[in-house]
Length: 558
Ligand code: ATP
Ligand code: MG
Image (cartoon, rainbow, N blue to C red):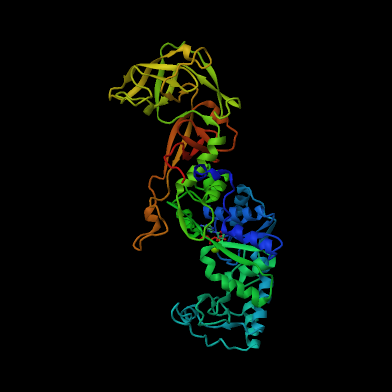
């Protein structure tokens, strides 16, 4: 890791540009408090990109003794739902953050409406009867100024009357809009008379049928920040072109000066994070739901066994930048391993078994071994593991014609059965097809750990007692998409063309009995294999484990 390379390892990391701005604002007295907000639109479940925004907004406030509001940006009644509101709150809590106040942009509809009338009275807004298409065409292009709407110069009285009629429900969807009257030739397209209100006869999940006109994002966001006295409104880079308009509304209305700052959104290799596409995957059944463990949603990665600490570590590692970049999903997986390695319980589970018989073991004898739940804490809590003369080991821990460097079990070779004895393979039993069905071995009683002198052998393998083994279901997850950069899909392709057909495989495995009693609530380590998280839809009959991440990987963060 970077810190290890330099003697400056113990120094705190450099401030990121947002921390610099906040420290400067506090120093110069530009602000006397720090209040940030996280503003999700309740039209889908939160994903890893949102986790970055959450860690940033809540993290900045925490660092500077400030607070954070949760504000639902719920101005689009047709796509939003309370299901999403509830899931968003659950996910933020799961990450370990607490908002000081729960707000809804829809709480501000009355105030926003008043401000719209104020703009009309100032001669800075007008009702436009043009169709959506005519308005778009009239906007011009970056190189070509727009053309003014024929309705642009209506009188204040006429505009007020029409806007009130819009509100009263006199017109159908799309018949009229309210636009700001700014500058149709502005080099910033956002200033070319942006739409403030559109007509939508739709029930809203909070305001019901009170409104049939709804404010646009640009007319809502800055003013909502201002109403709440948000000091630093942090959003993703694509909103930088909106910032001048954000400022224009605040200045023109003469309200509390919130400020917007932009950072690069999170992009991850092999991952899609557009809510629209994630919704399609759910609706069309490509995944089992928003919380399918292959989804990049927070409920998905939670079910997969990722932890809040791993996500926070990841957000800290990727930092905040002003330039878009693609992050390696392996860094996230590395963070998950880091966290789980430190605190997950260990169990032995055999996934592709072959029988191993100890010919010199006393018939029917069971010996219980006390094994630490986490080897980093050998004196800490332990589990009891039964050992008998009839065991299961992984098929690939045995090799008949083994190369020299193969240190696991081979004919005539020795290996230690983890936590227990050293054994030697005396005989290989095969079926008619030549498949190995049993390994007949002898154990050396003098090699019991703690009993006499320690003798070491090169290989250690895991095992379970056949009679005690509990069958569990393993859900092996792989990447949902096969393409590294899912943000650049060729024109003749659909993102779904890149779905990995084997992103989920299900198999059975044989576990030591203590696994089923694990109450840690986090993913466990199947020794020598990987981390696995008990799926909540496990039943009495079938306990299912989702593969969180493999144990080892050659990946190292820079
Ligand atoms: P999507 O494009 O996936 O639909 P969105 O931006 O429309 O996402 P919102 O609910 O509006 O989703 O997002 C809430 C907050 O999370 C916003 O401030 C947004 O900028 C931020 N956010 C969304 N996606 C990312 C991302 N990939 N990386 C960082 N922040 C993000
Ligand atoms: Mg959005």
